[in-house]
Image (spheres, rainbow, N blue to C red):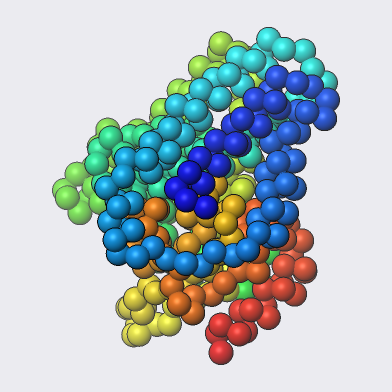
Length: 345
């Protein structure tokens, strides 16, 4: 597939239109598409581990197409959140249909909100930072920006990183640990930044504080104008997006660790500290997030030129399938520990 493949991300909101507009089984459209259809296709298609040549990479960097595909997710995500909130406030449906539509928004948000915010957030301009945080606010997880960029990338593969899953750790306990300590970590990072520069952590210069307040205002507005039920659905949808994000964090670094050089330093991050997946559908829909080894070695590299490093740890299937596998820890351990033993020997 050529660069047009990255437009596959927009099939998710297209399917979500069906989930929002129709009732019954159609309310589950996004869930069925994301967690049944895509994993099957991703697993059956031939793995594509080829990397761009230098000429092709230069062409990709100069092409506006890749930015259009990426930034186009911003208005789509924000628009769908508004549609969902207003729509369920005025629409009669069963409890099951309501949960299905909520789940569909959550599934979409994990890709269009969090994954897009991740890619945009690694770009350094103030506008990119703003867009990334707006997307994260739409799933009530804006502290991810600080924790991921200044915490996870520094501490990945160590016990200091809440987003690195330890060998034998169940997904569910990992998600709880990563959410709690990731939130605490974001506050610590911002506190350290401000006090290092002689500022105060209790001020409007504290971006974690400011954006937490923005999230609180958003929650208050939803409650005031749309009511308790709509607010609960929004919070549940956001949690589903976050759970899927943390499931991805779980599989990206499961059991992989960095060696300690001395009492104060770990070895430099390299491709062996992240699981890679060259399955075509996951690569396209997630803006090459699945080429995670190269991303961690060079976080600022735009998604379209990420490579599949030689001898990097490879997952047995793409991210959509691995998320499903991680939901059954004994089966996940049975499959992954064999690969983990292979790469760690």
